[in-house]
Image (cartoon, rainbow, N blue to C red; front, side, top):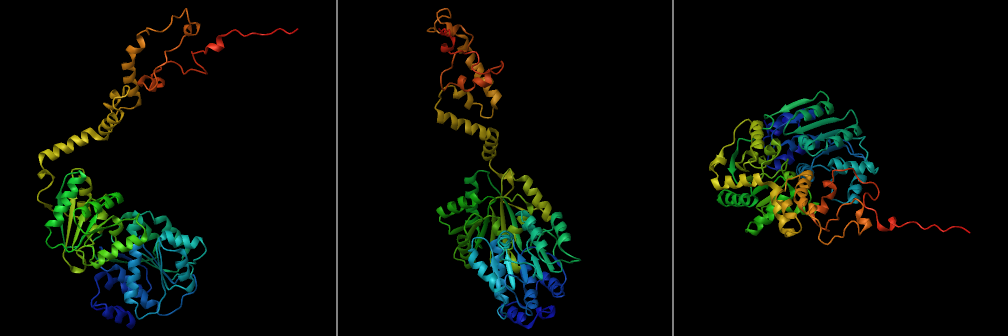
Length: 502
């Protein structure tokens, strides 16, 4: 089957031929005819199969007739991240060279005024992230009553990022008679519920088992210690040992680990960039463009780069951290092995990653082979060291640091040796140590007969800064004193002098 058999217009076919494509992918061959027939489509396919072109090409054919009005876009495409939205714009620029369509990109990190100017001129295709789209709508700069076609791309990623309430609100703003295209790489039960809510008698197009990985990817697990320096050292060994490595994506679970790992690799002589959600849009664009052009062969990224980014020549993917959600593993390694190319995916696994690894293997339906042995192949001293680290925990380490910082001041030594004690336990320990001092009489204290104030029932005032003073409130077993308590100041014990009136 060729693109000419799908019902696309001549202008689109010319652009596709100029781009070098001759045969459509399975998702394109099955979805495009239904989109041109004005039917709702639920598309399910693994990442890297051409889902973006599956709705871009028919949209260009359908938009050849008609004209956009100011602030009323004709079509709306929702994307979870700025990078995916910018990538869809590139697809329209590539395949829409023979069309005179106004395409607007509405994402965060860009001036509102520039985006508002594009909306004022009239927009045939509006590509947006949900948050910025709602900002324009709430400012009264946008109307969605003229939307004829709505595309919700990477729906599972929308769910993970918490955009579903925004999506539900946006869907209520567009006309009920619109055509809806719903694409996702995985189909958890929550996404199926949303598809039933948004789509009307949809045509289900499924070209691969949900959450399956491409057969062109060689997957391996790498056993490593749980300490950060051990993982970084093992990653450097992997990178240097791969002779076929042209470029590689390195994924971390946390944004701060992305910056730390990028600095570590750069200090060891690697040409590497970082990409995560806390970076400003200009820095993110520079990092991604440098990786795409080959100027920067290594890119350390969070899951913001795991979904839908079309970088076809990625040779390797390294999971520095095992992803918490098994679906993220499918998307991460899907950045390599695209369009029939061979790819390699390595995942660094520590002793605490067993549960996440089992969830991943259960999702993809196959075990992942180990490279150079599993976790049992780690040295015994490494296993014992990790066991001691887990046994001591953060409490012991914090107790040691607290003891060093205080330098043995007061009775802090007893507190530091029990870093995980709660407040009652610390109070009982302090009371036990303070009991002898409380029972011993003071040598210099005056007798009760000589001091009428001291004859009143009271407690001896502890020294400032002592442990007994800090835990006095917890040590007292009697009733809570009211007012001044048992201690009466001396001036209150003086007899009152009342002058008689003449």
